[in-house]
Image (cartoon, rainbow, N blue to C red):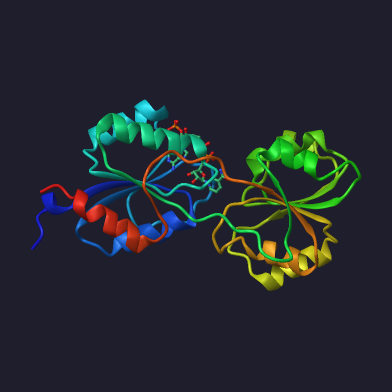
Length: 256
Ligand code: NAP
């Protein structure tokens, strides 16, 4: 029989499909005491099978305090590839507290034959890359970055988000259609969306993973350009790409 002190206390920084998959795997293990942390951006987050806390920590220092207070033995950064601040904070807090850290990340999508990608570094560049002439744009970069497209109000934006965007951001994009939906998306429905909305350009982050990739395939099939924002640089911490690899990293860190 395991004693409570045999349970490894871990903190999973989440908000992604990867974190949810890890949470599911952790729920079936009796040798971990996990906590999942969400930023609180999504109004109605999917139910999680392990204890969950919601909201910021107050920067790297706040996170370091939380790690100390809860005697966390390992930190898993399973946040989105574009959530650069929390990943920096995690790396800093791990270093400050001597907590082992591993990043559970999905590899970015790779350009394939037939893709017409315009790779850009950020949302401002993405807005400019759509071009001067008015276009019908499928915009899937998330509701929080919509303000960046105010510099290109001439386009018709088909905006797909999980939660409703801010009214102010929408007012700066006068010609738009809203679609509220949460992945995973399948190829058939993405083909249908591009055709129905007569999309001429797809704008997306290069988020990697299977859940939102079908729009890339659908755009390739009909030769549409994709303005694609490349992910920011990650901090220098070990990276893995599967739940199994996370568990393999954690085992040697278990305190005796
Ligand atoms: P961010 O810019 O990297 O982080 C901003 C602040 O939000 C952090 O400094 C932290 O606040 C708080 N935060 C972020 N993730 C957190 C977490 N898992 N637990 C507790 N606090 C967190 O993050 P973001 O890009 O806004 O993303 C927020 C969340 O949405 C993340 O969990 C991410 O995985 C998820 N997400 C992001 C994207 C995207 O495109 N960026 C897409 C899908 C999902 P304090 O400094 O106060 O601790």
